[in-house]
Length: 264
Image (cartoon, rainbow, N blue to C red; front, side, top):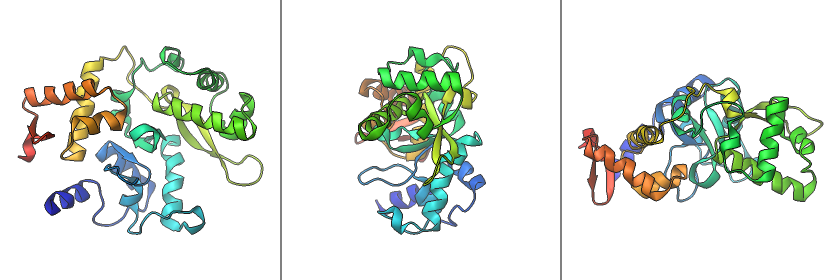
């Protein structure tokens, strides 16, 4: 078990010199493929914060030091520079990153800016996407006003709609902009306009196979339930993708967990 933890720590860039530049942050996301912004209790996934700091994640913004502030800035700068997708995706909507190539495999539609019309979105999420389509990237403070979701109740509904859009990969954060006083406002943009997603009608089975292969390569050992939970897949789809990797000799199943065949 200690050896496995050490191997996973190395794979997740938690050993060696902490990340100190956005170019290294890009390299980290490109290598692992997917990552949380910060670690979460009970969730075993790579996180950018753990790769960039030797300190525990602070519980309060008031206690944030240079590492936390740097990583928080990368959350919006990586997608603005088109180096990584950023939004609320993994494990039910946690702040996450996807490498552009993995994003293309995870993206479930054709890759046109208006293809969110094919996604099963609620009314408010769809209104936000339509506003971004017509106006281009907007600060969340401006976007909330544009779609009529101001005030405390409107803010909660806006946040829920943005999570819905993120989990469907419809939008990504896209830098920040100062709007009034206080903290800069996060910009939102349509994923299909911010990133090259390959175009064409996606082959769902082939895409999921590639995602499962990448997931195992990063996780080293994982269950079909972990794969389904990470990306919000139906359990049967996660099981089928991992079993296909076993059938073609790329993975092995031992004691209910899958691992890349080369690791044995």
